Length: 219
Image (tube, rainbow, N blue to C red):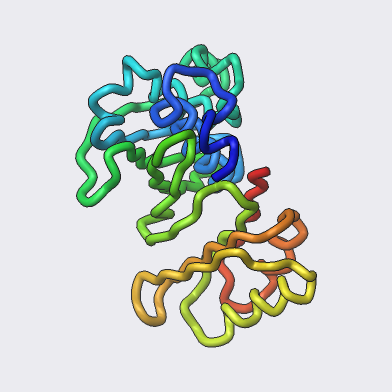
């Protein structure tokens, strides 16, 4: 246990779970989209759905999508800032089967029509777990820099990506892969020690059967 686990995150309140964690979920969703969103449809489940107005969870998620971090003093003004930035936001209290009580499913759309669906849970103390991207199960906490690689489920892809990272001297701290079906679309989530760089995306995107690579700089 470290001091962060005891005292909690540096944040704008009132709640580490409903505010700080929500900011981080929105922030990661924005990074995954990779360009400014013009539309955000935010589905809130469980405690998020019941108490979001009192705890400012909606403002926190919007702030994260806009690129703010939990200690940003502008969080309370995020709905107004979203309008100024051309971001249309819809908040939908919902039920998501099997989800953690503090769960948000965020559907973001960019100006060019690119869309991502990111689902994450705020699990306490400002910590989060991202558990779905575009309907596929993933699992990463957003505490380490992370590579997300969407690819065709075919032999050799995982090995080639892993060998590339190994050649750079990058240590993989966590690896998970899921797929829609055998031979369908698959997604790797790779948490690493150290930093990920955009040049890694460029190299991985040139590999056969890669559909998209996303480098998430999270620290």
